[in-house]
Image (spheres, rainbow, N blue to C red):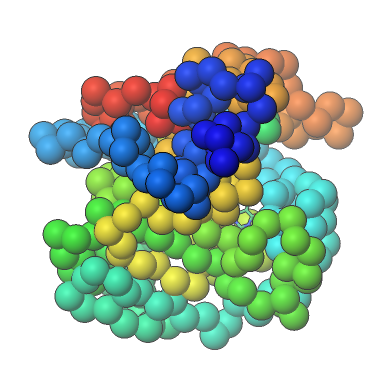
Length: 323
Ligand code: MTE
């Protein structure tokens, strides 16, 4: 077998860019090809996170609010991505009533001193939900401004006492085709999974959400518990979470698995790195008027406008390579 056959990449695609954007497929092919081994792929794991970065409480707090007008409740709850209930934006608000959100438990485990399965109430016990108005920038090019209700992810994670082997945190959505009929279609490898590097998960902006506009979270928005990571594309905000696992290696994530050249693990909002099929330079807010679904195009900002708070997490990292 030639190297090209092993890589299963047509010659016109063999450029540096194709190789690094397609790292996962390349690695899998190399691993499967006898004799080729993994030598020369020492950059397959991302650089370690910076050891010194700390965000001050004031710096963090300045990201918890925005002067921009929030998107209407009706739009936030009827224009959704939740493939477990269909691939159309209107499907989840119509279909998600089959999701039973009570009782709900979350299994927390992996590299931590105090693993456990607990009810949602126990998981967030002692944390008073706070409101944070975050921008949500979807990878598809639209965006919203959403008043979420939730608790800092770090506060919850710390109670399980992650060990030094916990380099990443993996999140898993409910896996139940009866409640989530979209799981009957192979649109993704179910259950939906997402992940963060441990320092990203411990960042004060990372938020575990239980509500919006002061009310309990509707099913279509990821009830009863979902993640919101405002500096990353919306798909990192995994919905209806049933498991949180501390892991040593970069975990499986659903969109990266489905189209690795289009969706990287980090998925930080970045106007300078286009999606292979479209530009990420601009976005359109959901407008909130009957006559016009989208407002005018506005420039997309690096890290979705949260660079002051989060750029330090990626100091020295090539954001084109680690998109
Ligand atoms: N979580 C699960 N389990 N399934 C999904 O299909 N879609 C993601 C994310 N979380 C998704 C998910 C995508 S693509 C986006 S943009 C946001 O949820 C949308 O969240 P919203 O509907 O509350 O705006």
